[in-house]
Image 1 (spheres, rainbow, N blue to C red):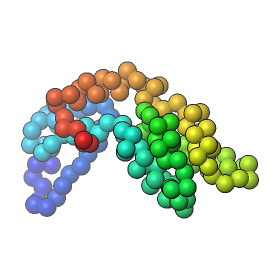
Image 2 (tube, rainbow, N blue to C red; image 1 turned 30 degrees about the vertical axis):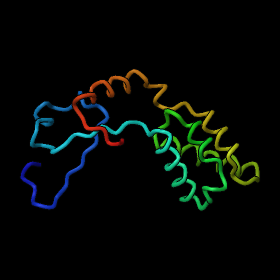
Image 3 (cartoon, rainbow, N blue to C red; image 1 turned 180 degrees about the vertical axis):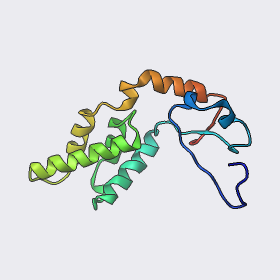
Length: 136
């Protein structure tokens, strides 16, 4: 990886940094190590807007702020999953997708931040002082 040609940028992700060989983590293999935490409320609002737009829904027709608040601790994929599940529910009910349907699905979802809380806390602890935060 250190012998890559100019203009090549290598990106890798890992959820279990403890399983990586120390030689793999040494300086020179990667120019920088970033820690990507769960999205904050502003990032969740942006994710909700993107996911609604991908499904041909106008984000301004929904209470994006309420959805972002209800999805505290959710990863982006979990927010997407709640929106997709709400679409299925609305279709089954022969109704339009609504903020309430998305909020219901979000409330019925247990995010990994709760089921794997100890592992996420350990990862955050490892990243403190070792990795550059990916978001402000």
